[in-house]
Image (tube, rainbow, N blue to C red; front, side, top):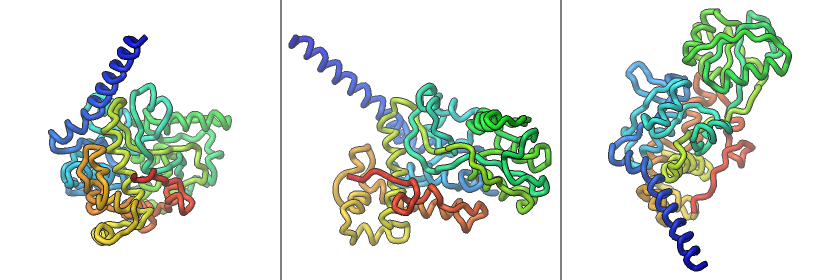
Length: 340
């Protein structure tokens, strides 16, 4: 019996060692490479899109930058890898990208069958529909028999079919591999309606030929929690991505901004803020990061609220209200565990 206990204990230690090695792999690779390979969308205004000079920006891009800030203290050490909905999972599985930050919905099958770990939600969304005002439709329930532009290989395509079937409506799907192709086809009048996440509708409407001629219908037909994901078994790497996002959420909760982070570091007596900014404790060491990892994120990228307002908020072309993406203390769903 004692021998069996020793064998079991040895096996447990061996498994822990293997898990630790697997968990450390990607972080070590990224450090050795000197840059984070971040999988993003091929272009979605407000979330991830390059400008005329090829400079990427958006809510998802800020998460890529936050991870680079946490590891290297330098948001320039990111390679943005554009991926289509069809390509994104293969890119992650193959190691072409270190993680995905590209409007991807958390689902059971993706989390289990595809072998990924979702490590947070950086935007709570839901699927909707956009139509031309001239169509005279004020509800998605009046779209029976309509042709609908949709991106293939997405939960959007599946939700569309489910919604029409559940409501006994005829559906004419017009599918495209890339989201921008679906939007362009809709803009050219090849479809009666266009469907994607509500945030995506706002983003795509902002770049149509005549945005004011289009309306977003009131129905939200699904839950679409969008967030970053890593490969199964990358436990330490998952921690790095998860807590880079959490740091931005916690910073907003406690009023730590790009503008005041230095003052907060020097004067704050709030224990949570002091741990977050590295003024006390060694939180970074626990994840294989510098102690100033979260300070660098806030200084170089900002807190979650700053990122939201900069890219998708009411003063941007998307004009999105915080809604579910407000802090938990203000009626939203943003709730990050404590730094301790």
